[in-house]
Amino acid sequence: MTRITASTAEARIRISDRVADQILARIASGEWAPGQRLPGERQLAEEMEVSRVSVRAALQGLKTQGFLAAVQGGGTRVVSNAASMDPSLAELIRVNHQNLADLAELRCIIEVWGAGRAASNATAAQRAELSEIMDKMEADIAAGKHKTENDIRFHLAIAKASGSAVLMHVMGTFRGILQKMLDVHRYEMFPTPADDQTILTHHRAVHDAILAGDSERANAAMRTHLDWVVAAYRDEQVRKGSDPS
Image 1 (cartoon, rainbow, N blue to C red):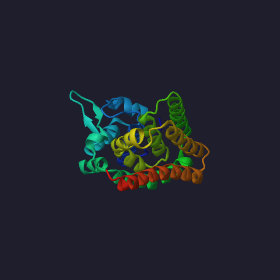
Image 2 (image 1 turned 90 degrees about the vertical axis):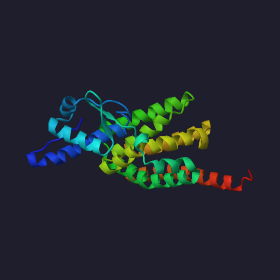
Image 3 (image 1 turned 135 degrees about the vertical axis):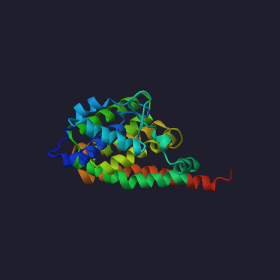
Image 4 (image 1 turned 180 degrees about the vertical axis):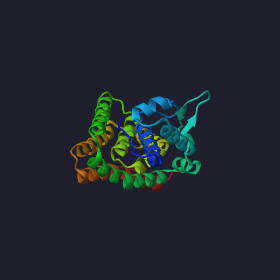
């Protein structure tokens, strides 16, 4: 766990913000799932080597933002992103493939940037985590299982490795939407073993570029992956538009 330090009491607010960023990163990576209870203030303070006052301030801020909620009897749990998602956006995602294609294009903008940042900023531990996710994804697909959770963990781990608190926040907020989108991918848009292999190849290219520390190659690999997703949605729109049924 990264140590968070401060030389003066005046820095306490900044420390609580950084504690909040670490908590968000761990939620975004899937370490703490929606509904899961977080460790207590004392344990978090010891892990991050900060005061309980800073941890308490961070937790309170995340409760106010809707990421965490108090547990009856004491403690804190992760709020389901799907439950806290803007209802109008959730409805848009359900409506049609046009909106899903638009979301894929938006993801392309932010995740291409994030992949490049991850190649530059990922720590050794974050690179190891990304490799662990990649290995699990390959093993599951080889066994005939394509788990949406592997995809989510992969993309969120890249956001965490980028070192950008803003990107981690955005991707953490989008977790519920991403779940819906990837479920559509798995069961409607890309259901075949050949699709699984294409996705695996794309993810491996992104993974390898990040581990090599090659930002340009990571950008290009993520763009290739998400451009492929967008193109599939656009093709589906054309097909449905020409379908007399």
